[in-house]
Amino acid sequence: MDPIFLIIRTIGEIFAFIAILRFLLQAAQADFYNPISQAVVKFTQAPVAPIQKVVPKIGRFDFSPLVLAFLIKLITLVILVTLSSNIGLDVLALAMLALVGVIDSLLSMIFWATIGSVIISWVAPGSPHPAPQILLQITEPLFALVRRVLPSIGGLDLSPIVIFLVIQIIQSQLPRVM
Image: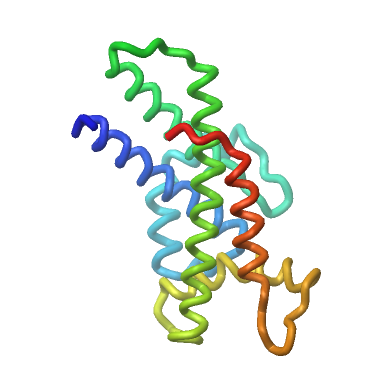
């Protein structure tokens, strides 16, 4: 892979990751005063602000960070395809790839946050550090949702396993393109 393509793709993925993280923090109603939350909001506020004027909130969910992530992935794909002289520019196909990329990134972030949350619950439960607190705050609403359907069995919380399975099923249905 050409180093220029790698650099462009990496920068695009990092910016999209931060935008998706903002969505997850807002959706989970994570502690706004956590330094990580504040950094994510400050970093994304300028590009998200105009999108918030166009994209309405639905309940407590603000989808403007996801729209930003979609735009970032789309722009990254357009740049990569434009730099590659042997591929034609099909904006609709690139938009679909960007949408699939956002969904896949969102699911991957939830997957890894769930793994991190499980490890934290074993190693450092109740840690005052901002990073474990954010992971727990992102995953707890999902854990609570699964616990309503599937209660703990003998003190064993099976909600992370159910979340892993659901994520794997959804990701297996997404087209693999990147």
